[in-house]
Amino acid sequence: MTAECGRSRRLLWPDNGPRSATPEVIEAQEHVEGCASCAEFFEEMRQLSADVRSSVPQTVAPFEVRDRLFKAISRARTETASRFRPNAALFVTATSAVILLLIFGIRSFSRDNPPESRSLIPVLAEEHARALGEAGIKSSDAKEISRWLNGRLSFATHVPVFSEASLRGARVLEVEKRRGVLIEYALGKVLISYFIVADGPAAGAASTPSLEVTVWDGYRVVTWAEPGLLHAFVGNVSESKLRLLARKCIEQAGSTMAAFSELEPVSDWTPVN
Amino acid sequence: MARHSRSTPTRAFEELVSENVDSLYRTALRLVGGRSADAEDLLQDTVLRAFEHFSQLRHQDAGRSWLFAILVRTNLNRIRSATRRAEQFHADLSDREFEQALAAWRANATPEEFLDRKELAESVIKTLDDLHPELRAAVVLTDVEGFSQREAARMLDIPEGTLASRVFRARRELRQALSESSRGLRAREGT
Image (cartoon, each protein chain N blue to C red):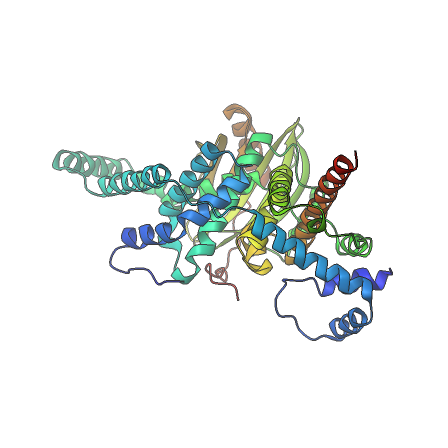
């Protein structure tokens, strides 16, 4: 058994599908052809895979489970439909409310808090729950993280530093076809994620951001907007702590506004060949 | 994969779910360690999330893998929420570590030689249920549901190499458990 065995087995790992015939793959194939130990390895892998496949019973969903599932879909459909079919009284009320909001200058509020931002909250909460992963940097040095982010994003990013929370790292992510960054902090034993996500064109004058608080999947989410960017803090801590971090973040960022350019959209979910 | 009705999105969604409900339920059952109530809960959560985002699925041929991606991610998110990332899965192998583990593999007498069909299946199921959730998801998607490792990696949002090392580690644990079962059986027969 040699290091060559390990390398060949990794390169020719079964089930990885078609692979390019690179010189190293050809070399690995030549090794395996002459190595009884590797041949046994691949045979055993195939056998274990077959054992797993044949051992798991081909269970079908019981009738009651199907029934409850499709009833739940039906309820969801009804709820969705009812949201879009208001009755006359609701229509009058809503129209009046819209007129009043317009009168009181809601346009400014809307510019800073676009409705699309809300739809990002579930995704941000989900991203928060994930580990930093391989696509990121683990560091407690704000400058190092800033350098790492430089060139990976199309907007200027300020990495805030807090006395009450320690910096852990960052990663770049795609959120609903928008490029963004997650900067992670530890507040005691609790992890907090700070997101900055490209969110529409950078046009428009900056005004004092207003903080919005939402709870999703058990996490508190504090969001605010500036032209071209959505900011969010997500964590399982009190609203006051998240608001405090958000306010400090806004203060530190000062007048840093988005130097935003159009981004390539991420590819849609397509079949993998 | 059948193409789904374009008449209404809801109808198309229900057809997609109906075609895949058995395999989704089966996978949910394995992901939650065989607890049927939890499997149903996970399945329902998955399907409602999928319903909410169905308009984002533009390539309906990818519907099956899209549903499975939501299922495994919903499950892992639940687990991570419960543990609040206190037990992050730091143990993924680097390429070098993976190669060392692969090189260290020693051929064994196959457990099929000592275990009958029923004993083998019971051991496999028990080991699957005891695996770390990240390893379990990798092996269930590939070995049980037959997704390619590329598809499974995409569903779990991890590199293909990481997926391969997780499948390998799952099989290594599986072999270990099967070997112990067959040793136990031989010992009982010997006494």
